[in-house]
Image (cartoon, rainbow, N blue to C red; front, side, top):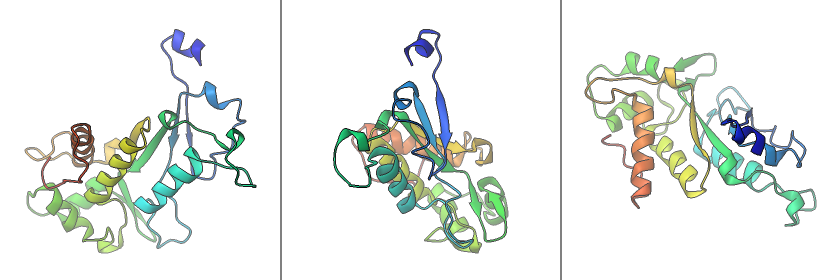
Length: 199
């Protein structure tokens, strides 16, 4: 790991849930970042593919606090340090038979310029399941960013950022990106509540 840093490089890997134990424990210290692909986590087609509850379970129970079969607290059961772990957030929604990006859903269901909280409701309803497409609402996105901050993770990433929606005068850099940025900034200032009604 030091040799990479000496050359201004970081070594990163991307793993899907279920692959958290793929590397030998002696390999872990040489990896600077593990990008956890916490999306497409369906057991059946109608499942939410990236729910907050499932994401939290994967990050906390599978990557940060892995234990052996005897469930003891010895160091041998511990794998990734929190600063190595980067949480994946999808910028797309899944239906039982198809996929749409956040931008596509915005263009399809938001007919007038609205504030982000109203945009979220227009696309997803109250529970992220309107029109049978399921992904993060802006509220659950905020909770994921707060979780990353509270657990001191290495960060979050979007798959993929090009699927976000840029709206001039509302979110020129992207609705999802600016929501995540605002939540992280508010957390750093001591505000942990998920405020998504303005960017």
